[in-house]
Length: 326
Image 1 (spheres, rainbow, N blue to C red):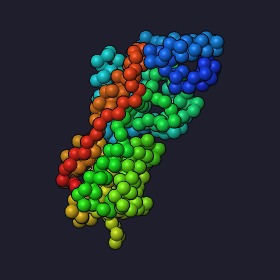
Image 2: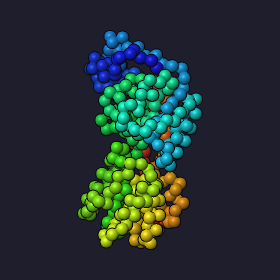
Image 3: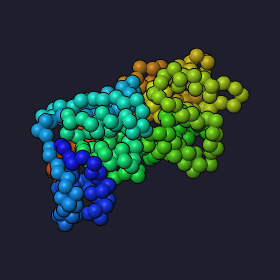
Image 4: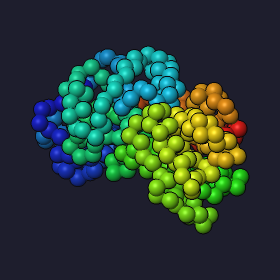
């Protein structure tokens, strides 16, 4: 798709007296917008001499901040299978800093792709406007609260709260939390679920028992777990925002001669293959990684093909899988 230079989606939205999200839907998925609204946006584009031309290629891009997290592997398989069924190709891209507008220059200047799936947060404002002006976009497993971007997610808040409530139900009262960076929407909601579950049970939230890790890194999580398990007052459970963190916590407990789950119970999140490779196997929150990828890709292709989108916010269910670590 090509557009007139120097015209932003915010300018079109302002002239048509609609939100930028609505203007984006008219440009990328006109079937999802009322005819009267669509006509106003199209007239605004005409007034601004803004023309849209779509290319004929069927290439999609999925953007990640890393490929280390094993959770993404099933997401990618789901995306690839969905794309293949509708004769699209899926390319993968890793960006180093999702918060840096410069990380998106390659995408804004490219003429290769028809649409993009983001598996990370996107900077709001001008950067997001520039991307939405050029491409239909969907977010997978995360979303921006301040931007009306179609997304496929789980309920991270409820899932984390359920996990902590389960730990409380088996007698744990001193629960630590190893979380990811709060730059991720899922980390924010999982931490809120953790805090609210403890508060509802009348249990203390110890700030020094909450860790935020910048990356899904086993060695750093191992070091953090050892720190949590040292000293006179230690947690009797560790809730982890990733199964990788949970694997590291189990290793730390073993190295410190702490029995799992008698001395410390460990709960992960994702239900990747690693959870059955430890001793004991890891209890975890199972989220449907394959379906997250599959449905996000289908949602993107529907936008590209102008098909009516019944729901731009898809929330998939999770469940707690109980194994030996709790």
